[in-house]
Length: 497
Image 1 (cartoon, rainbow, N blue to C red):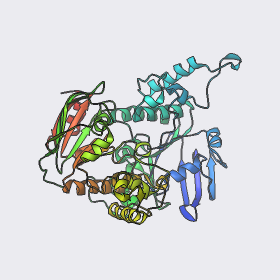
Image 2 (image 1 turned 90 degrees about the vertical axis):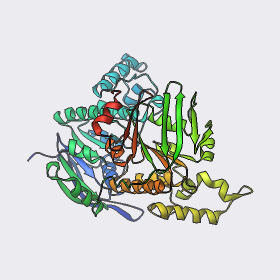
Image 3 (image 1 turned 120 degrees about the vertical axis):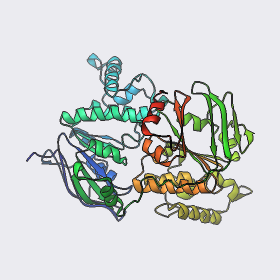
Protein backbone atom coordinates (compact mmCIF):
# COMPACT_ATOMS: atom_id res chain seq x y z
CA UNK A 1 0.00 0.00 0.00
CA UNK A 2 1.20 3.54 -0.75
CA UNK A 3 2.87 5.26 2.21
CA UNK A 4 0.85 8.34 3.28
CA UNK A 5 2.41 11.79 3.03
CA UNK A 6 0.95 12.50 6.48
CA UNK A 7 -0.15 10.07 9.15
CA UNK A 8 -1.41 11.40 12.50
CA UNK A 9 -2.29 8.84 15.20
CA UNK A 10 -3.80 9.36 18.66
CA UNK A 11 -3.39 13.15 18.57
CA UNK A 12 -4.63 14.84 21.75
CA UNK A 13 -4.40 18.46 22.85
CA UNK A 14 -5.69 20.44 25.85
CA UNK A 15 -5.75 24.16 26.65
CA UNK A 16 -6.03 25.23 30.30
CA UNK A 17 -7.35 21.81 31.26
CA UNK A 18 -9.97 21.71 28.48
CA UNK A 19 -9.43 18.87 26.00
CA UNK A 20 -9.97 20.13 22.44
CA UNK A 21 -8.62 17.07 20.58
CA UNK A 22 -8.91 13.47 21.76
CA UNK A 23 -7.18 10.52 20.04
CA UNK A 24 -7.58 12.00 16.57
CA UNK A 25 -6.34 10.06 13.55
CA UNK A 26 -5.86 11.59 10.10
CA UNK A 27 -4.05 10.54 6.91
CA UNK A 28 -3.20 12.33 3.68
CA UNK A 29 -1.89 10.71 0.49
CA UNK A 30 0.05 12.18 -2.41
CA UNK A 31 -2.25 13.58 -5.09
CA UNK A 32 -5.23 13.65 -2.71
CA UNK A 33 -7.51 16.44 -1.52
CA UNK A 34 -8.70 15.43 1.96
CA UNK A 35 -11.47 17.68 3.30
CA UNK A 36 -11.64 18.34 7.04
CA UNK A 37 -15.12 19.31 8.24
CA UNK A 38 -16.68 20.33 11.52
CA UNK A 39 -18.40 23.20 13.28
CA UNK A 40 -16.38 26.10 14.64
CA UNK A 41 -14.64 24.78 17.72
CA UNK A 42 -14.67 21.15 16.53
CA UNK A 43 -10.86 21.06 16.47
CA UNK A 44 -10.05 21.38 12.76
CA UNK A 45 -7.73 24.37 13.01
CA UNK A 46 -6.09 23.03 16.18
CA UNK A 47 -5.26 19.74 14.42
CA UNK A 48 -3.74 21.58 11.47
CA UNK A 49 -1.82 23.94 13.75
CA UNK A 50 -0.22 20.88 15.32
CA UNK A 51 0.71 19.58 11.86
CA UNK A 52 2.15 22.98 10.90
CA UNK A 53 4.18 23.42 14.09
CA UNK A 54 2.20 26.25 15.65
CA UNK A 55 0.98 24.08 18.55
CA UNK A 56 2.73 21.12 20.21
CA UNK A 57 0.65 17.98 20.62
CA UNK A 58 0.17 16.53 24.11
CA UNK A 59 0.06 12.91 22.90
CA UNK A 60 0.20 11.01 19.67
CA UNK A 61 2.50 10.35 16.73
CA UNK A 62 3.03 12.21 13.45
CA UNK A 63 4.66 10.51 10.47
CA UNK A 64 5.72 12.42 7.38
CA UNK A 65 6.39 10.13 4.40
CA UNK A 66 6.56 7.20 6.81
CA UNK A 67 9.10 8.68 9.24
CA UNK A 68 8.15 9.80 12.77
CA UNK A 69 8.68 13.56 13.13
CA UNK A 70 8.54 16.06 15.97
CA UNK A 71 7.14 19.25 14.41
CA UNK A 72 8.06 21.80 17.05
CA UNK A 73 7.94 24.99 14.96
CA UNK A 74 6.57 26.40 11.70
CA UNK A 75 10.15 26.43 10.39
CA UNK A 76 10.42 22.68 10.97
CA UNK A 77 7.08 22.16 9.21
CA UNK A 78 8.33 24.17 6.22
CA UNK A 79 11.49 22.04 6.11
CA UNK A 80 9.26 18.97 5.87
CA UNK A 81 7.40 20.47 2.90
CA UNK A 82 4.29 21.65 4.77
CA UNK A 83 2.75 25.00 3.78
CA UNK A 84 -0.35 26.66 5.21
CA UNK A 85 -2.82 29.13 3.79
CA UNK A 86 -4.52 30.47 6.91
CA UNK A 87 -8.10 31.65 7.13
CA UNK A 88 -6.90 34.93 8.58
CA UNK A 89 -4.61 36.85 6.26
CA UNK A 90 -0.93 36.86 7.17
CA UNK A 91 0.46 39.66 5.01
CA UNK A 92 2.51 42.82 5.65
CA UNK A 93 0.23 45.62 4.38
CA UNK A 94 3.00 48.13 3.64
CA UNK A 95 5.08 45.70 1.54
CA UNK A 96 4.39 45.05 -2.13
CA UNK A 97 2.68 41.98 -3.54
CA UNK A 98 6.04 40.57 -4.71
CA UNK A 99 7.73 41.29 -1.36
CA UNK A 100 4.94 39.45 0.48
CA UNK A 101 5.11 36.47 -1.86
CA UNK A 102 8.88 36.16 -1.33
CA UNK A 103 8.86 37.11 2.36
CA UNK A 104 11.63 35.16 4.09
CA UNK A 105 12.85 33.71 0.78
CA UNK A 106 14.01 36.85 -1.01
CA UNK A 107 16.45 36.16 -3.89
CA UNK A 108 19.78 37.97 -3.70
CA UNK A 109 21.80 39.51 -6.47
CA UNK A 110 25.17 38.08 -7.34
CA UNK A 111 27.67 38.33 -4.49
CA UNK A 112 24.61 38.82 -2.19
CA UNK A 113 24.61 42.60 -2.66
CA UNK A 114 20.97 43.61 -2.23
CA UNK A 115 17.75 41.88 -3.28
CA UNK A 116 17.10 40.77 -6.83
CA UNK A 117 13.89 42.79 -7.15
CA UNK A 118 13.63 42.23 -10.88
CA UNK A 119 13.47 38.49 -10.35
CA UNK A 120 10.97 38.92 -7.52
CA UNK A 121 8.64 40.99 -9.70
CA UNK A 122 9.00 38.62 -12.66
CA UNK A 123 8.38 35.39 -10.73
CA UNK A 124 5.59 36.93 -8.65
CA UNK A 125 3.83 37.99 -11.86
CA UNK A 126 4.19 34.45 -13.26
CA UNK A 127 2.72 32.95 -10.11
CA UNK A 128 -0.21 35.37 -10.13
CA UNK A 129 -0.87 34.61 -13.79
CA UNK A 130 -0.95 30.92 -12.89
CA UNK A 131 -3.74 31.83 -10.45
CA UNK A 132 -5.53 33.78 -13.18
CA UNK A 133 -4.90 37.14 -11.48
CA UNK A 134 -4.02 40.24 -13.52
CA UNK A 135 -2.38 41.96 -10.55
CA UNK A 136 0.57 44.36 -10.44
CA UNK A 137 3.21 42.72 -8.17
CA UNK A 138 4.65 46.18 -7.38
CA UNK A 139 1.43 47.32 -5.65
CA UNK A 140 1.40 47.61 -1.83
CA UNK A 141 -0.82 44.88 -0.36
CA UNK A 142 -2.81 47.44 1.65
CA UNK A 143 -4.29 48.69 -1.63
CA UNK A 144 -5.73 45.29 -2.55
CA UNK A 145 -9.20 43.92 -1.91
CA UNK A 146 -9.71 41.03 0.50
CA UNK A 147 -9.99 38.60 -2.40
CA UNK A 148 -6.78 39.85 -4.00
CA UNK A 149 -4.93 39.59 -0.69
CA UNK A 150 -6.14 36.01 -0.33
CA UNK A 151 -4.73 35.18 -3.76
CA UNK A 152 -1.36 36.67 -2.72
CA UNK A 153 -1.40 34.29 0.28
CA UNK A 154 -2.04 31.37 -2.06
CA UNK A 155 0.69 32.49 -4.47
CA UNK A 156 3.19 32.65 -1.59
CA UNK A 157 2.39 29.07 -0.55
CA UNK A 158 2.55 27.76 -4.10
CA UNK A 159 5.91 29.44 -4.73
CA UNK A 160 7.51 27.17 -2.13
CA UNK A 161 6.41 24.06 -4.08
CA UNK A 162 5.39 22.28 -0.91
CA UNK A 163 4.22 18.67 -1.17
CA UNK A 164 1.76 19.10 1.71
CA UNK A 165 -0.60 22.07 1.44
CA UNK A 166 -3.10 23.01 4.17
CA UNK A 167 -5.87 25.32 2.96
CA UNK A 168 -7.99 26.82 5.75
CA UNK A 169 -11.04 28.54 4.20
CA UNK A 170 -9.04 29.72 1.15
CA UNK A 171 -12.10 30.84 -0.80
CA UNK A 172 -13.92 32.72 1.97
CA UNK A 173 -13.35 36.10 0.28
CA UNK A 174 -13.35 34.91 -3.35
CA UNK A 175 -15.99 35.16 -6.06
CA UNK A 176 -17.16 32.20 -8.14
CA UNK A 177 -14.86 33.18 -11.00
CA UNK A 178 -11.84 33.40 -8.68
CA UNK A 179 -12.76 30.08 -7.06
CA UNK A 180 -12.81 28.49 -10.51
CA UNK A 181 -9.28 29.83 -11.14
CA UNK A 182 -8.08 28.53 -7.79
CA UNK A 183 -9.58 25.08 -8.28
CA UNK A 184 -7.90 24.74 -11.67
CA UNK A 185 -4.57 25.46 -9.97
CA UNK A 186 -5.28 23.01 -7.15
CA UNK A 187 -6.17 20.27 -9.60
CA UNK A 188 -2.86 20.80 -11.40
CA UNK A 189 -1.06 20.57 -8.05
CA UNK A 190 -2.98 17.39 -7.27
CA UNK A 191 -1.90 15.85 -10.58
CA UNK A 192 1.72 16.69 -9.74
CA UNK A 193 1.45 14.71 -6.47
CA UNK A 194 0.75 17.47 -3.94
CA UNK A 195 -1.42 16.34 -1.03
CA UNK A 196 -3.90 18.92 0.25
CA UNK A 197 -5.91 19.25 3.45
CA UNK A 198 -8.94 21.37 2.60
CA UNK A 199 -10.96 23.09 5.35
CA UNK A 200 -14.12 24.86 4.24
CA UNK A 201 -17.67 25.53 5.41
CA UNK A 202 -18.83 25.70 1.79
CA UNK A 203 -20.23 22.26 1.16
CA UNK A 204 -20.38 22.68 -2.63
CA UNK A 205 -16.60 23.07 -2.67
CA UNK A 206 -16.11 19.89 -0.66
CA UNK A 207 -18.10 17.80 -3.13
CA UNK A 208 -16.51 19.55 -6.08
CA UNK A 209 -12.86 19.22 -5.08
CA UNK A 210 -12.17 16.61 -2.43
CA UNK A 211 -11.42 12.87 -2.66
CA UNK A 212 -12.03 12.00 0.99
CA UNK A 213 -13.75 13.69 3.93
CA UNK A 214 -13.04 13.50 7.66
CA UNK A 215 -15.59 14.99 10.08
CA UNK A 216 -14.63 16.25 13.56
CA UNK A 217 -17.12 16.94 16.33
CA UNK A 218 -16.16 18.06 19.83
CA UNK A 219 -12.51 17.19 19.20
CA UNK A 220 -13.12 13.63 17.97
CA UNK A 221 -13.25 12.01 14.55
CA UNK A 222 -16.84 10.90 13.93
CA UNK A 223 -16.48 9.81 10.28
CA UNK A 224 -14.00 9.37 7.43
CA UNK A 225 -15.32 8.48 3.98
CA UNK A 226 -14.77 8.85 0.28
CA UNK A 227 -16.50 11.95 -1.05
CA UNK A 228 -18.46 9.94 -3.61
CA UNK A 229 -20.08 8.03 -0.72
CA UNK A 230 -21.12 11.17 1.18
CA UNK A 231 -24.36 13.17 1.07
CA UNK A 232 -24.97 16.72 2.19
CA UNK A 233 -27.60 15.71 4.75
CA UNK A 234 -25.42 13.00 6.29
CA UNK A 235 -22.41 15.32 6.62
CA UNK A 236 -24.49 18.00 8.32
CA UNK A 237 -25.89 15.45 10.76
CA UNK A 238 -22.40 14.20 11.57
CA UNK A 239 -21.02 17.73 12.00
CA UNK A 240 -23.70 19.16 14.28
CA UNK A 241 -25.14 15.99 15.80
CA UNK A 242 -28.62 16.90 14.61
CA UNK A 243 -30.41 17.38 11.28
CA UNK A 244 -30.82 20.86 9.78
CA UNK A 245 -34.27 20.92 8.21
CA UNK A 246 -33.46 23.59 5.66
CA UNK A 247 -30.24 25.04 4.43
CA UNK A 248 -31.58 28.55 3.87
CA UNK A 249 -34.60 28.90 6.17
CA UNK A 250 -36.20 31.86 4.37
CA UNK A 251 -39.30 33.02 6.20
CA UNK A 252 -41.94 35.16 4.61
CA UNK A 253 -42.16 38.67 6.06
CA UNK A 254 -44.62 41.08 4.48
CA UNK A 255 -42.50 44.13 3.56
CA UNK A 256 -43.68 47.52 4.73
CA UNK A 257 -43.21 50.95 3.14
CA UNK A 258 -39.90 52.05 1.70
CA UNK A 259 -37.38 52.63 4.46
CA UNK A 260 -34.14 53.49 2.61
CA UNK A 261 -34.23 55.12 -0.82
CA UNK A 262 -31.01 55.84 -2.72
CA UNK A 263 -31.15 57.86 -5.96
CA UNK A 264 -28.29 58.55 -8.40
CA UNK A 265 -25.58 57.97 -5.77
CA UNK A 266 -21.98 58.31 -6.95
CA UNK A 267 -18.60 57.82 -5.30
CA UNK A 268 -15.70 59.12 -7.42
CA UNK A 269 -13.97 56.25 -9.22
CA UNK A 270 -16.05 53.59 -7.46
CA UNK A 271 -19.82 53.99 -7.87
CA UNK A 272 -21.82 55.60 -10.67
CA UNK A 273 -25.50 56.59 -10.63
CA UNK A 274 -26.70 53.96 -8.12
CA UNK A 275 -30.43 53.93 -7.40
CA UNK A 276 -32.44 51.43 -5.35
CA UNK A 277 -34.86 51.15 -2.44
CA UNK A 278 -35.26 48.68 0.41
CA UNK A 279 -38.46 48.31 2.43
CA UNK A 280 -39.07 47.67 6.08
CA UNK A 281 -38.80 43.95 6.78
CA UNK A 282 -37.10 43.26 3.44
CA UNK A 283 -33.77 41.52 2.77
CA UNK A 284 -32.14 43.05 -0.29
CA UNK A 285 -29.23 40.94 -1.52
CA UNK A 286 -26.32 42.75 -3.20
CA UNK A 287 -24.35 40.67 -5.71
CA UNK A 288 -21.29 41.40 -7.82
CA UNK A 289 -17.76 40.32 -8.59
CA UNK A 290 -14.80 41.62 -6.60
CA UNK A 291 -14.31 45.26 -7.59
CA UNK A 292 -17.96 45.72 -8.59
CA UNK A 293 -18.54 48.21 -5.76
CA UNK A 294 -20.54 46.11 -3.27
CA UNK A 295 -18.51 46.99 -0.18
CA UNK A 296 -18.03 50.57 -1.39
CA UNK A 297 -21.82 50.97 -1.51
CA UNK A 298 -22.17 49.89 2.12
CA UNK A 299 -19.25 52.10 3.15
CA UNK A 300 -20.81 55.10 1.38
CA UNK A 301 -24.09 54.52 3.22
CA UNK A 302 -22.17 54.42 6.50
CA UNK A 303 -20.29 57.67 5.89
CA UNK A 304 -16.97 56.00 5.09
CA UNK A 305 -16.77 56.94 1.40
CA UNK A 306 -17.09 60.49 -0.02
CA UNK A 307 -20.43 60.74 -1.82
CA UNK A 308 -20.60 63.04 -4.85
CA UNK A 309 -24.10 63.58 -6.13
CA UNK A 310 -27.34 61.79 -5.50
CA UNK A 311 -29.73 61.70 -2.58
CA UNK A 312 -30.36 59.35 0.33
CA UNK A 313 -33.74 59.28 2.10
CA UNK A 314 -34.57 57.39 5.28
CA UNK A 315 -38.27 57.01 6.10
CA UNK A 316 -38.98 59.74 3.59
CA UNK A 317 -36.53 62.31 4.97
CA UNK A 318 -33.30 63.32 3.18
CA UNK A 319 -30.12 62.55 5.15
CA UNK A 320 -26.47 63.48 4.64
CA UNK A 321 -23.83 60.93 5.63
CA UNK A 322 -20.37 62.49 5.96
CA UNK A 323 -19.18 60.38 8.91
CA UNK A 324 -20.16 57.08 10.58
CA UNK A 325 -21.62 59.04 13.49
CA UNK A 326 -24.14 60.55 11.03
CA UNK A 327 -25.19 57.06 9.95
CA UNK A 328 -25.42 55.76 13.52
CA UNK A 329 -27.56 58.72 14.60
CA UNK A 330 -29.85 58.13 11.62
CA UNK A 331 -30.29 54.47 12.57
CA UNK A 332 -27.99 52.80 10.04
CA UNK A 333 -25.76 49.94 11.25
CA UNK A 334 -22.90 48.24 9.39
CA UNK A 335 -21.31 44.81 9.87
CA UNK A 336 -18.10 44.98 7.76
CA UNK A 337 -16.55 42.20 5.70
CA UNK A 338 -13.37 41.99 7.78
CA UNK A 339 -14.76 41.50 11.29
CA UNK A 340 -11.37 41.13 12.96
CA UNK A 341 -9.83 44.36 11.67
CA UNK A 342 -12.91 46.53 11.19
CA UNK A 343 -15.62 45.17 13.48
CA UNK A 344 -13.96 44.08 16.73
CA UNK A 345 -11.39 45.07 19.32
CA UNK A 346 -9.92 41.60 19.60
CA UNK A 347 -8.07 41.96 22.91
CA UNK A 348 -11.11 43.40 24.70
CA UNK A 349 -13.95 41.39 26.22
CA UNK A 350 -17.27 40.40 24.71
CA UNK A 351 -18.87 42.94 27.03
CA UNK A 352 -16.64 45.79 25.88
CA UNK A 353 -17.20 45.00 22.21
CA UNK A 354 -20.92 44.49 22.32
CA UNK A 355 -21.45 47.78 24.20
CA UNK A 356 -19.17 50.00 22.10
CA UNK A 357 -21.88 51.96 20.21
CA UNK A 358 -23.99 52.50 23.35
CA UNK A 359 -21.41 53.60 25.92
CA UNK A 360 -22.87 57.11 26.09
CA UNK A 361 -26.25 55.65 27.08
CA UNK A 362 -24.60 53.66 29.88
CA UNK A 363 -22.59 56.54 31.34
CA UNK A 364 -23.37 59.51 33.51
CA UNK A 365 -21.03 62.50 33.74
CA UNK A 366 -18.36 60.44 32.00
CA UNK A 367 -18.59 57.50 34.45
CA UNK A 368 -19.76 54.07 33.28
CA UNK A 369 -22.37 52.12 35.24
CA UNK A 370 -20.46 48.84 35.51
CA UNK A 371 -23.32 46.80 36.92
CA UNK A 372 -25.66 47.93 34.20
CA UNK A 373 -22.97 47.27 31.59
CA UNK A 374 -22.66 43.62 32.59
CA UNK A 375 -26.44 43.14 32.75
CA UNK A 376 -26.88 44.60 29.25
CA UNK A 377 -24.05 42.44 27.89
CA UNK A 378 -25.52 39.29 29.45
CA UNK A 379 -28.89 40.11 27.89
CA UNK A 380 -27.35 40.34 24.41
CA UNK A 381 -25.25 37.20 24.93
CA UNK A 382 -28.41 35.27 25.80
CA UNK A 383 -30.40 36.79 22.93
CA UNK A 384 -27.82 35.78 20.31
CA UNK A 385 -26.67 32.54 22.02
CA UNK A 386 -23.04 33.71 22.07
CA UNK A 387 -20.88 30.83 23.27
CA UNK A 388 -19.34 30.55 25.77
CA UNK A 389 -21.75 32.90 27.61
CA UNK A 390 -19.02 34.83 29.43
CA UNK A 391 -19.07 38.66 29.16
CA UNK A 392 -15.46 38.87 30.38
CA UNK A 393 -14.03 36.50 27.76
CA UNK A 394 -11.66 38.05 25.21
CA UNK A 395 -13.27 38.20 21.77
CA UNK A 396 -10.05 36.89 20.23
CA UNK A 397 -10.71 33.47 21.82
CA UNK A 398 -14.18 33.00 20.31
CA UNK A 399 -14.96 30.97 17.19
CA UNK A 400 -15.65 32.82 13.94
CA UNK A 401 -19.40 32.37 14.23
CA UNK A 402 -19.53 33.74 17.77
CA UNK A 403 -17.29 36.68 16.83
CA UNK A 404 -19.77 37.50 14.07
CA UNK A 405 -22.63 37.45 16.58
CA UNK A 406 -20.73 39.97 18.72
CA UNK A 407 -20.32 42.29 15.72
CA UNK A 408 -24.05 42.08 15.01
CA UNK A 409 -25.03 42.27 18.67
CA UNK A 410 -23.40 45.63 19.29
CA UNK A 411 -25.97 47.26 16.98
CA UNK A 412 -29.06 45.64 18.46
CA UNK A 413 -29.51 47.46 21.79
CA UNK A 414 -31.33 50.15 19.84
CA UNK A 415 -32.91 48.30 16.92
CA UNK A 416 -31.46 49.91 13.77
CA UNK A 417 -33.67 51.07 10.93
CA UNK A 418 -31.23 49.72 8.34
CA UNK A 419 -28.70 46.91 8.89
CA UNK A 420 -25.99 46.38 6.26
CA UNK A 421 -24.22 43.01 6.40
CA UNK A 422 -21.09 42.55 4.27
CA UNK A 423 -20.34 38.81 3.95
CA UNK A 424 -22.32 37.96 7.13
CA UNK A 425 -21.50 34.22 7.10
CA UNK A 426 -17.92 34.33 5.81
CA UNK A 427 -15.81 31.72 7.58
CA UNK A 428 -18.54 30.37 9.89
CA UNK A 429 -19.88 26.83 10.06
CA UNK A 430 -23.28 25.60 8.91
CA UNK A 431 -24.78 25.72 12.40
CA UNK A 432 -23.63 29.31 12.95
CA UNK A 433 -24.88 30.25 9.47
CA UNK A 434 -28.36 29.09 10.35
CA UNK A 435 -28.24 31.07 13.59
CA UNK A 436 -27.20 34.17 11.64
CA UNK A 437 -30.11 33.67 9.23
CA UNK A 438 -32.51 33.36 12.17
CA UNK A 439 -31.17 36.65 13.58
CA UNK A 440 -31.78 38.32 10.20
CA UNK A 441 -35.34 37.01 10.08
CA UNK A 442 -36.06 38.20 13.62
CA UNK A 443 -34.83 41.69 12.73
CA UNK A 444 -36.86 41.70 9.50
CA UNK A 445 -39.98 40.86 11.53
CA UNK A 446 -39.21 43.93 13.65
CA UNK A 447 -39.23 46.09 10.52
CA UNK A 448 -35.48 46.42 9.98
CA UNK A 449 -34.46 46.90 6.33
CA UNK A 450 -31.51 44.60 5.60
CA UNK A 451 -28.85 44.89 2.89
CA UNK A 452 -26.97 41.61 2.60
CA UNK A 453 -23.77 41.64 0.55
CA UNK A 454 -22.52 38.15 -0.22
CA UNK A 455 -20.16 36.30 -2.55
CA UNK A 456 -22.10 33.11 -1.84
CA UNK A 457 -24.63 33.00 -4.68
CA UNK A 458 -26.74 30.15 -3.23
CA UNK A 459 -26.99 32.19 -0.01
CA UNK A 460 -28.17 35.27 -1.93
CA UNK A 461 -30.76 33.24 -3.82
CA UNK A 462 -31.91 31.46 -0.67
CA UNK A 463 -32.20 34.44 1.66
CA UNK A 464 -33.04 37.54 -0.39
CA UNK A 465 -36.46 39.00 -1.18
CA UNK A 466 -34.84 40.88 -4.06
CA UNK A 467 -31.32 41.02 -5.51
CA UNK A 468 -29.45 44.09 -6.74
CA UNK A 469 -26.46 43.29 -8.98
CA UNK A 470 -23.47 45.61 -9.44
CA UNK A 471 -20.88 45.52 -12.22
CA UNK A 472 -17.94 47.93 -12.37
CA UNK A 473 -19.67 50.36 -10.04
CA UNK A 474 -23.02 50.41 -11.82
CA UNK A 475 -26.32 48.60 -11.39
CA UNK A 476 -26.38 45.77 -13.94
CA UNK A 477 -29.42 43.83 -12.77
CA UNK A 478 -32.44 43.78 -10.48
CA UNK A 479 -34.30 40.58 -9.64
CA UNK A 480 -37.30 39.65 -7.55
CA UNK A 481 -37.09 36.38 -5.64
CA UNK A 482 -39.11 34.58 -8.30
CA UNK A 483 -37.01 36.00 -11.15
CA UNK A 484 -33.59 35.30 -9.63
CA UNK A 485 -31.77 32.24 -10.94
CA UNK A 486 -28.09 31.42 -10.57
CA UNK A 487 -27.51 31.79 -14.30
CA UNK A 488 -29.35 35.12 -14.62
CA UNK A 489 -27.57 36.67 -11.63
CA UNK A 490 -24.15 35.47 -12.81
CA UNK A 491 -24.75 36.95 -16.27
CA UNK A 492 -25.60 40.30 -14.68
CA UNK A 493 -22.52 40.05 -12.42
CA UNK A 494 -20.38 39.64 -15.52
CA UNK A 495 -21.98 42.72 -17.11
CA UNK A 496 -24.32 40.88 -19.49
CA UNK A 497 -27.90 41.82 -20.18
